[in-house]
Amino acid sequence: MKILEERIRQEGLVLPGNVLKVNQFLNHQIDPDLMLDIGKEFVKLFGEQKITKILTVESSGIAPAIMTGLLLHVPVLFARKQKSSTMPNELYSAKVYSYTKKIENTITVESKFLPASDHVLIIDDFLANGEAVNGLLKICQQANAQVVGVGIAIEKSFQAGAKRITDQGIHLESLAKIASFADNQVHFVGENYNG
Ligand code: 5GP
Image 1 (cartoon, protein in one colour):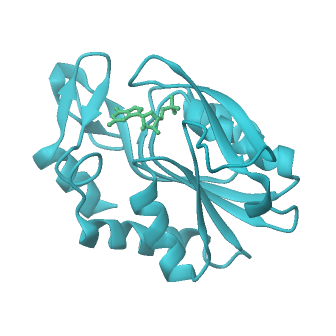
Image 2: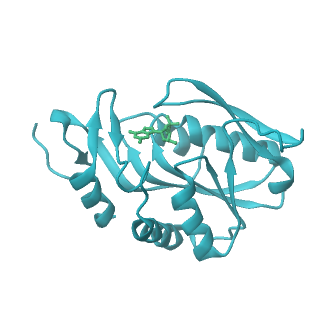
């Protein structure tokens, strides 16, 4: 997705540990027009299939997820990282090791919002080692819900996540694919780089 790649190039900051900071439009301040364009792209890629729910994890997955849900007119469910006191005991949960925070979270979803009849499109902001998406897949398994596919805004293709998901036979689509952060620059998959 050209416009997303351009924004990453212009505004992204490569931090130590292969972390890309995009706080100008995705992870802190959010650009709603760009999020809407991302939603439209996911609809192009997955919209032919039956989708009854969008599933993501708080907090940075919510913006692209909600735009996709808006365009498809389906509810958007986000897994929580901390158990809320307002949530009852009927939960689906999975342990997720956070790439950026280096801590393990238990993500949870209230079971009544994910019936077995659901056809789920999983959306997230970044794909690194696939921990977050794998946790969401485990939650869908617990619910016996069908996973239609996984849509990612920014995939770091040099990390293990993409293979981990596609090896399970799951349809993965990523809108910007990063091949490397060599020389502290963002290099996208498919572009020529001789560094
Ligand atoms: P994974 O679970 O695939 O290892 O990592 C994905 C999750 O970690 C995403 O939900 C995202 O919040 C966070 N993450 C991973 N890599 C990056 C990165 O380079 N930049 C930012 N901002 N978040 C990242």
